Length: 559
Ligand SMILES: Cc1cc2nc3c(=O)[nH]c(=O)nc-3n(C[C@H](O)[C@H](O)[C@H](O)COP(=O)(O)OP(=O)(O)OC[C@H]3O[C@@H](n4cnc5c(N)ncnc54)[C@H](O)[C@@H]3O)c2cc1C
Picture 1 (tube, rainbow, N blue to C red):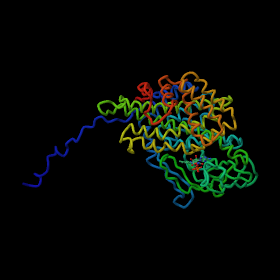
Picture 2 (cartoon, protein in one colour; picture 1 turned 45 degrees about the vertical axis):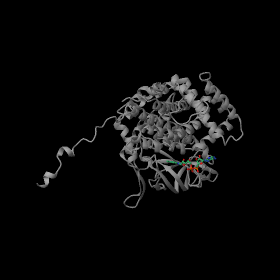
Picture 3 (cartoon, protein in one colour; picture 1 turned 120 degrees about the vertical axis):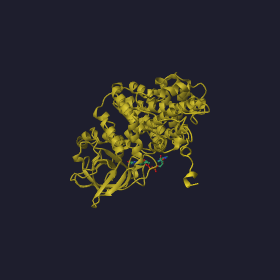
């Protein structure tokens, strides 16, 4: 017998081990706008119906499978820093995967960084928020420089001589990532550098100093010496920076290059190694006499930059609402295909309870975000302005804080494959705490709510006026509003109780919005699960009677 006679037959090598059945499949091309009933309704309701056709086109673009793949790519290949070129020149160059640039280009060409400033009018913020909401579902990290560029405009406008030079190119729909002086560019991006090692929330602790180089005051040149411990998107063309001027903490605009074409010494020491938000470079920097122009009044740095921070906080709400929507879309899709114990998952009563509960969270987050967007469009009206002041802090706190657990629960709906890196969930999950921590962490937001109510008591009346619009629609909200008013009015231990108070305010305003605008089955289940004794516990604890099938149906995206 020769050796070949010992070999098994080819048929045995190629034997089929198993048939691949009962597995989910990729959610195919879908229109991220048309397939989102809550978003469609919010856009019309809050004054951006005129943008409907454009939003359909945008929803189709960003909902395509190939386009959505850019989000994964931009995070798989993290940005890299080159401090010097090969000849030894300082360059502070961050290089990105082409997918990141593609996402930036889309955002800028669709005005996500500027449309309400360049084309203000009814619904301008709402339409932008709708686009941001969709694009963030594809990828959140690149949204950081987009948001900062958008948010910088109100701060910059405090100094008209600077705004005149910078604003047209900040708001232009041109993405130019080249590492060249801003004078050579038609489109610019803006970052923000406040945080230092010794103090992030408390920026008054900033130690970076500003020295006048000639005349002093708004619009004049200073040299900044110090460090900034968190500078995201360090390839931006300029940064709003806080530094101690002779008369106190002041805001400055610091360009990446000096007007004479030399590198401005905002030197990037290293990029942070982040657990999430990977596509976005965040850096540690030193300012070694970097040229910057004063923005706003000397000593009014916090007041000047807070204009920017208010906008970034709003985008955190929208971004986390988008994270919730992305997670629940994937969970609904998966559970409409996969079966266990002889039944499709979304037909199993307990899974219906979980999925519907996740949808309610996401509907509440969107409704509040879009209501604030409309208020931002109408700030000339006192009531709307007061709502922006209060509800941005409430929403930033609540929506961002609810998102990590939401992402985790949606991941669990997928089962083990949800944990794998080739599923969208690890990225959604790792991204989910970021919005809650930056731009004023949870406690800071709650204290800001207290500050607003203390300093401008009219915000409380504005808030209850909003709740009153839903009065009589659900007994639980009526009771909730009465006890909330008592709690807010009681100054004892108010700082200690701040989270409890703001939690309740957030749930009340979300419930009031859903009762006015969402289908009854959505609003009723929201109130029954979140405003009754015991409050909301784990997802999947909706009380009996909730119309889970209807809640899920309107939220399930179909390719
Ligand atoms: C990915 C990422 C990117 C970032 N990019 C930038 C950037 O581009 N530019 C920039 O300037 N910063 C940036 N930051 C920094 C961020 O804004 C700060 O981390 C944040 O403001 C918190 O500051 P801190 O880290 O110093 O924490 P701390 O200020 O030390 O706060 C720690 C904790 O204490 C709480 N706390 C603070 N004060 C009180 C109080 N009075 N009562 C009760 N609790 C309180 C806070 O809520 C927080 O939970 C970034 C952060 C991250 C994570």
